[in-house]
Length: 191
Image (cartoon, rainbow, N blue to C red; front, side, top):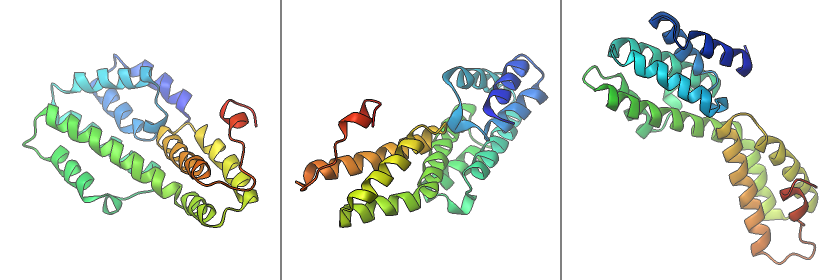
């Protein structure tokens, strides 16, 4: 299923049964980084409806997070201690719905960030190597790869790629090179 098919599913089940809403929320974990503001609003509406039954909401959120971990090729053991703590807080039977949702937000953000870091670790190593060696050919190659990543549908991947690109750009501004790279054309859509 792609994001467009999932959007249709969200809209179909927005006013559906609790069982359908739980299933959609769980499945949303496969698409969190790609959700539009409208998708997020609709999912929030579903979660809000389920808030009347915290155990059902928790079941949905557990499935959502499990799928988000899988999408990011992570396990719970890969998570930072802060995110693990938030995950446990969310799962605790003693938390309020508000606390559960706050913990969910932190866990989702943490997983997305760690997933992007993991997926772009090799690229980050290449950026760091370039910063040491200043190989102009490598700069052009990295620029092209980062441009592709910046157009990724996953906002976490996009953000990480933008950070790496900024690191390259900042370094090139800091150092007076014999042949500085001209950033302007591709920053405004050319290149």
